[in-house]
Image 1 (cartoon, rainbow, N blue to C red):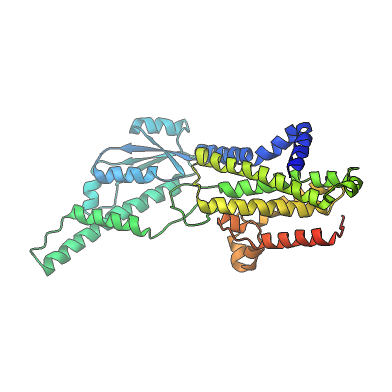
Image 2 (spheres, rainbow, N blue to C red):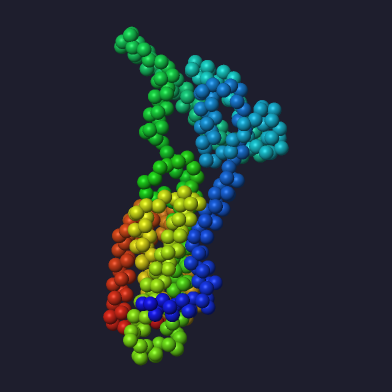
Length: 377
């Protein structure tokens, strides 16, 4: 094994640029894609002006609810400023939380609580205003429910003292804990995670796994080059066979790739706050063995590297579309559940160590090593 590693190092010195590129490509491409889409998300938020004419707790709670929306960028300005900004199209629209908002809510009033401003180019005025209306209806509903509860408590036991603020505070706690309605704006939602009010476009590990498969396939062209070289006849005079030579080199490549996989996990944890767990480590080791053995078996079928590159790229493209790593396929998998079991990267995305495809690939390698049959495309 030592001699195999030393021989491979000699070859790597001649092609270290391409080797380093394909080893680093998955983590760099993933970081660039995630950061670029995050910047695009931030820039694509709808600019909305909010004018606060009172700073009561209920009005401030409404403001925080609007700020928590992942689709809106809030600008707190005066009424005169938002009018000027709408005229210059710096804001899509603006809303004024009128003075006396909390008092009117407590009295059950729903009219003229908020004033809206828009222009001819305000494309998001209607959905934003509907969102504000829903928040106002929540406040009025809480107030009405609180008065009803107080009335029932007085009828049942006049000595019972329950304040309006206590009831409304309790309703907010129940709403936050129960999470009665939740909508996830995401292309990928894997595992049990804490749901946040944010727009998630890409799954980090889903993007990484696609680029990692592509880099592994392109790095595995060494198998075709070794088969086409003039060293194969020399193995008749060497203590181990050509097949053993290929398998030992496969181990060297797999360990090298696994080291860079570890670097990817560290980079994602540092730059993207991705959690690292023992389940992820185990799933990553399984995936690396699966990916390396799969690329090894595929490369054995080819004699021409360019044909191999074309097939590899087409395979990765097909996998990216159908696997659910990047694009959503929940509707398809719900209709055809067997597609989940056919997906070779689904266990990794679920951070599962067990992968039936790994057993299949290992059996195929054992058969290839034992029989010595040659199948070329």
